[in-house]
Image (tube, rainbow, N blue to C red; front, side, top):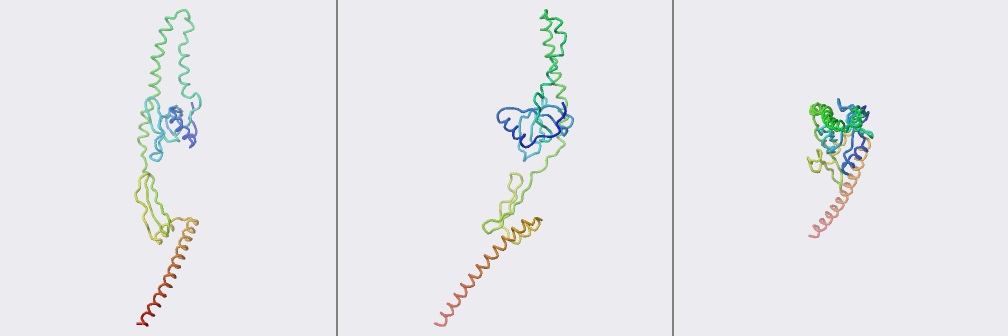
Length: 229
């Protein structure tokens, strides 16, 4: 069997997830990126969290269950995995020569069954070598996300690594937010921030004018009270 050229697509991963939820164990074939076991057939027994590791497809191969990435496996064609077992009944060819002697047929059935574990042992031998190759691959750290947000007249910054919150949203000054946005070389982002800043500036100027008018009115009233005194 030749190795598949491409790995699992997003839709195929979802189909496998649904099959596992229904109690089935879909068959897959190892691709060329899987190394020396390319072309062999295994069964998916579990899908772990892809956010923790790229190798979240757990495949049973021989007597071992090993993690692989979606690029290492592909959906096995129909009939895959049964072809290795089909030639076994053809091995004892002398059976037609003795149709009238059931004793010989009964003697040969146990011999054929004793030979089956040898085939399984031969197929399982590459598994330890695969373990050594996968152990060398280090797992990278979880992704880091820093978020700058604007809401209700305030700029906030938050940080999260994977599913862990490193810093809850805290308020920063508009000047600091503007410096952060300046690091992002995207014209649309700059325009959006400038519009927010202009709106805030106009609102602050209106409030200042209103306060100045109120202050002038209070000072005039105070001057009148002083003259009356």
